[in-house]
Each structure stands twice: as C-alpha cells, then as structure tokens.
Amino acid sequence: MLRLGLALLAAFHLVWGLPAIVAPHWFFDHFPGAGHRWTAAYQPYNEHLMTDVGAAAFTLGVLLAIAAVMADRRVTNVVLIGVLVFSALHLGYHTARHGTLSGGDLLASLVSLVAGVLFPAFLLWLNRRRNT
Image (tube, rainbow, N blue to C red):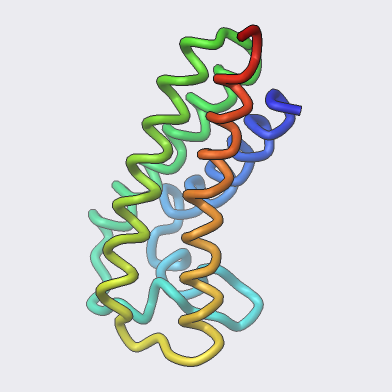
C-alpha cells in the first residue's frame, strides 16, 4: 500500500510538473484544467517562476518514484518529509493569499492543497509503522 501511494504521489507531481516546465504559459493559463484557472488567479505571469515551480514538482515526483522503487524506509522518510515541507509551505501561502479565486474554486484549491499535506503525512505514518 505504501509503495502504491508513493507511486501515485510521484505520478501526480510528474504530471503537473512537466507541463509547467515545457509549456509554462499554457500551464499558467489552464491549471488545473476543465475550465478552472487557479494559477492564473495570481497575476502577473512569470515564465521563470512557472518553470521553476514545474521543476520543483517534477523533482519531487522523481524522488517519490525512486522511494517507491527502492522501498528503503530511510529514503522514503527523507523524500516524504521533503514533500511535506513543500506542501505545507504551499498550503500556507494559499491560505493567506487567494489571488482572485473565490467560491467553489477557492474551496477546491484549498481542499486539494490540504490533501497535498495529508496524503504524504499518511504515507509517512505508514512508513514509520513498517517494520516497527
């Protein structure tokens, strides 16, 4: 279950990180998709920032994939703690600043960011219970 969770979290980070790297303006205008524009609610567009955010997400995805493959408890702890730090800081920013988001989009974005903290925290808990 832990390895599957790591793989899912890795895929999520890779899937949203790659477009921000290769098509930062498209990512800015369209994330998360389906007619919602959460990133564009934080103007102005900055190609460097979008590319860096994509690189950070993609890097976390690679590290999560490595942790899933290695199945080493210490490696998994380090990677998940890194993901938790990033996710908690990301949540903190968006909790304090909403850009032009309101209503359902604001709620959905905050719920997704909270899930981005809770899911790796749950995986860290699973990993710490393993072989204890």
